[in-house]
Length: 304
Image (cartoon, rainbow, N blue to C red; front, side):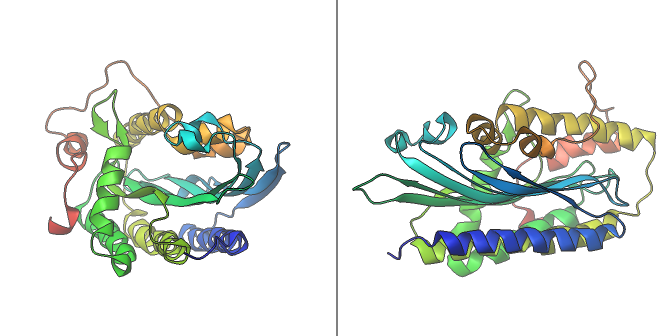
């Protein structure tokens, strides 16, 4: 098994951030990302890039971070207690894009690398990440395209990868207290090292590189759809579900906060406007109800 090349991973991740920002600026047309570089007192830092009030993107963030320290936070050792007491490095790119238009889905992507070390012992390392789609008004063509792009990214590494990572995504992005999925899924993986460093790194790159061809065609198709206050109201209510997941369940949010990360960068994933109404329900038979009846149901979108 080849030794981890931390420098190569960092170089790729910083390049990925650049490429995604460039593609999203082009898709938006007028909006531009502003960069905020930061340092972490306990070690490391990152580049936060935010696009606000663009033509298509109401708020989007594409972050790179590389942090390190003497011990992993509890969120990282909860399911890997053998790592307690090891020093660590963690690096990754994480993004969330919230559109203006309710007919354009919110999208999320993340790829990351962890390595934990202890003198006299072999390093423990893994890759993680994925991408998922959260529509407000579902579209079968969009779902098929999103999942086909995800499958194409996984297939060179084994036919079992896509169904495994898809199921993992369906299970992970699930609001237990609401008994509903966050969206229509995609890919999610963590603790990946069984392929060896070179192939695990290549798979992570394939998934990271697939985000742009997965989301940009959807943005182009839906960005000019007409909408009114009813659609905007529904979008704001559904954004509330997004906030609930990120603050209650998301491992990346917990890791960032527990490791002393930069709060503004960690919470850039939250939408600029959101709405909660007591016991809100979509009207029966409405376009909004279709999201619950058809799209918030895990399924094989490649066979729809």
